[in-house]
Amino acid sequence: QVQLVESGGGLVQAGGSLILSCAASGRTFSSYAMGWFRQAPGKEREFVAGINWSDLSTYYADSVKGRFTISRDNAKNTVYLQMNSPKPEDTAIYCCAASPGHAYGSRWYAAGKYDYWGQGTQVTVSS
Image (cartoon, one colour):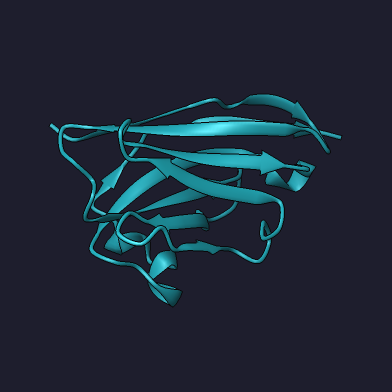
């Protein structure tokens, strides 16, 4: 059974840093694109960042570009989201997801293209 399990969420001060992890099990995700999404209360789910396993290419939403960094560890089948200088508006539940194949451009934003989803981890940024 495929599982994606996020960890690392919590309370962080604005301007601080936090690292989220997404551990994948049940299969090898070497042919999958991995994305991070978030959903704040009363708002729709939105794409945050993504990474292709094949060539390590990355993609970021404009709202986090330059502040967040996505990376992955093949040996651990784990994807990370380094959150630097978070803002109160980054407060949300963060979920990782896996999409078969290579993602690019607008495809990153299409939640329907992702086959597997984690349960999410809460991130709260205090001002």
